[in-house]
Amino acid sequence: MSVKPLDLSKLKVFPLSERQSLTRADEILIDPDSEPRPCPERLVPLIKDCAQSLLAARKRDAAVMLIYGAHLLRNGTAKILERMMEQKWLTHLATNGAGTIHDWEYAWFGASTESVEMNVGTGTFGTWHETATNIHLAIMAGALDGLGYGQALGRLIHEDGVTLPTVQALTDAIVASPSDPLTPARADLLQAIQQQGWATGRVTVEHRWKYASILAQAYRHGIPVTIHPGIGYDIISNHPVFNGAAIGRGAERDFKLFGGSVDQLDGGVVLSVGSAIMGPQVFEKSLSCVNNLRLQSGKSIVTGHRVYVVDLQDGGGWDWTQGEPPKTNPAYYLRFCKSYSRMGGAMQYLQCDNALFIHHLYKELLQLKA
Image (cartoon, rainbow, N blue to C red):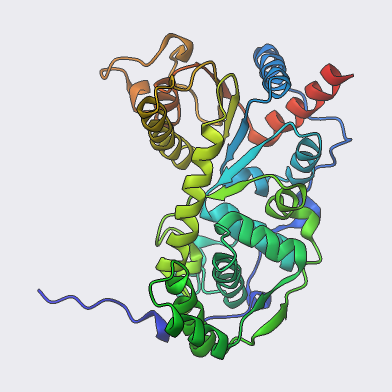
């Protein structure tokens, strides 16, 4: 059977103004100074333990990594996380592709989220011109400056635009040094400029809600933020500008940068909040790479780290502080618990709403600091 790939250059895309957005930035954002909703009593000691571990890690200059799913942003925690970044309580943030899409849409459009069920049937799910265009613009421009996906998009939002070299400058650089490491990135950008009709020079993209962007605040505070997407996972694939090489290039750099933070995790803390698949999958590969390189140089593997996994799903009725259950137990198949339980150190699982956890953790950190 002969199968032909889709010609995505023929996709019809639409302005965000035509989409029915289901959430608005100014309606979801939580005021960091507000009183958090009540927390289940069973979680209080775990959150206190997490806060104490986090401050102890920072005192010894160890990494504190927040790995989060898109719902943490959609549940309105951006301003709380900005406060935590300002205090240097977080040293690295990581999310998936969806986390960047909602982040950029809130920052530029002030709204995000659509009905997947309704829009797939009309062929409009994800086919939003500005979202795919500007995220690709950020990634492609950032690649020329050695930036990964996360920092490139954070820069676009924080600085309200990017500067693109001219067609002639890109062409000259490619011809002059075809084997240069930047040649593939230059070629991808050159193609996008020509095919999408992008202007060169300073390209202004005003973000009136940048306070709703986790990525922009991380960039502003100089904190590494890495993105770990899948090709075809995200709506930026639903546009003629889609370029898997550009996305992969940014994600490759981010995986390496993620590993750099894992290498600083001795005695540190990992917060995996609402990332059921990406977080554990990326972390286990990165930790293996770090340990591989350490052992080659005669160093010991990463030790002494603590992992706090937060999700709404139950933990299968298993005490994960005792290690993983047998394969005959359904809890064995909870990836977000099982993978982290294998990563050395100590793991705690908190079944909790992610925004509630972050808000209470922030308040507990403030009390301990006082």
